[in-house]
Length: 208
Image (cartoon, one colour):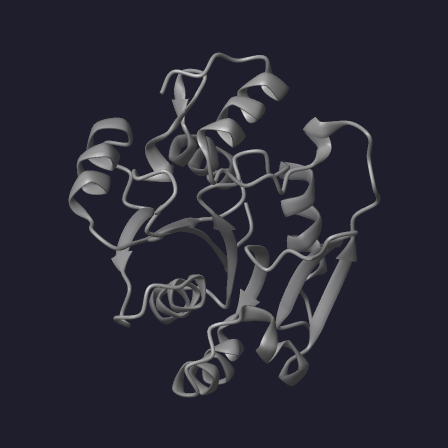
């Protein structure tokens, strides 16, 4: 367990293409939300879930994690719906210096990668993986020092996360290419086909 880092799950997206909350999609018998919570619980003393509407999430947490006061829900403090505003809202509310951010549509994110990022965070404001496709800012660590730079972007109506990176200390972790699809922890769920693909990779059945 790492003492000065919170786990942050971004679950406030509008899911326009799917038309439903990605967090509650099923991978086998588990929701995507539960998969991510279970990955973060051994790593972080606090888990913050950034949402747009807390009701469904509150019921789910109360049912599946009764008595666990380390899992908290927060609503975006900004009206704009964006991943950047979700990161900003979470960093404003966490009780630790760092936040390990994971988007709620990335159930394949690897624990080993998260552990590596946590180990690399010292002396940096951002720790972010980089693949052949580029940076993965929705699977990254951010320090609270980033808040003022994120505020600057938001005031400029700029919601591109990586645009504040030149202003802070960034550690990039290069992810080598792999022919094994299970190793690509950055597969996002944007469509039902993506969900079926992930279930196929894991050898589970799509329950949705």
